[in-house]
Image 1 (cartoon, rainbow, N blue to C red):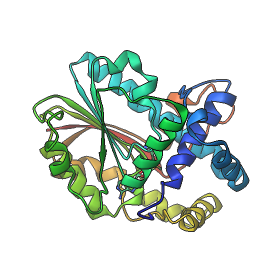
Image 2 (spheres, rainbow, N blue to C red):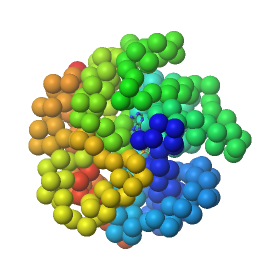
Image 3 (cartoon, rainbow, N blue to C red):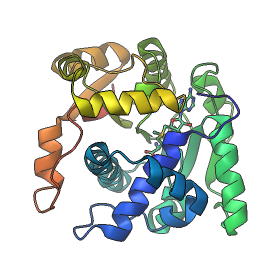
Length: 283
Ligand SMILES: C[S@@+](CC[C@H](N)C(=O)[O-])C[C@H]1O[C@@H](n2cnc3c(N)ncnc32)[C@H](O)[C@@H]1O
């Protein structure tokens, strides 16, 4: 990722949520702010670059992972969670969109400095104000220490039950960077805190290497300077991998699980074949 450039993929995923919100007849996730958040010239550029066979399943992935996360978050809040840390938040609009849940939370948006800067500027252009209980923490996962940066904040309480989401980020990091961050999360949160994330199924990626869908998306990510790296897991041993990093696995959804849980009633029922969702808690 270019150090001075907003993440293109964060604009893409917001565009997909906006597209879904406007066009879906069976709405899975209602990000009614995304369409305003993505500037119109950016939307035009994205439209020119859409690869139809990738766009539909990728959009299904993006909206189902947000829905999955916020469903679990709502339940966690009922069970006493008071902090929500959004890792690699991109254009996530939770803090403005879910005022009903914000009342009960301190929210921390962690993101690459350039992406966070872009979002702040865009909010200013739109006249949107961040709530006082939203804390923006610029961090480059490849260069900075999440543990130090979060625990240095007086607003972050390591003793409180915390919910972490990490959506669409792991595959842009190396496996070492992923594992380092997971260890930090386990170190800075009280036992029973939640982490929801999506990850590349490394087995499926190897099997699918020759599929057109994967080749085209890989080429595109390289072109926009956000190449996939090695971060990901083998779902068959995810439970053991997470246990070594300080987490118990609660649920691991395969693409077909995601399709049958969320997309049964939809016209386009497919998600990307190599992305799984995981729900885990700290030991
Ligand atoms: C595909 S976007 C996902 C954004 C958001 N979570 C969503 O679901 O729409 C990837 C996000 O990861 C962030 N990211 C990628 N590499 C990063 C790094 N090294 N440090 C911090 N954030 C990073 C980008 O800035 C971007 O916001």
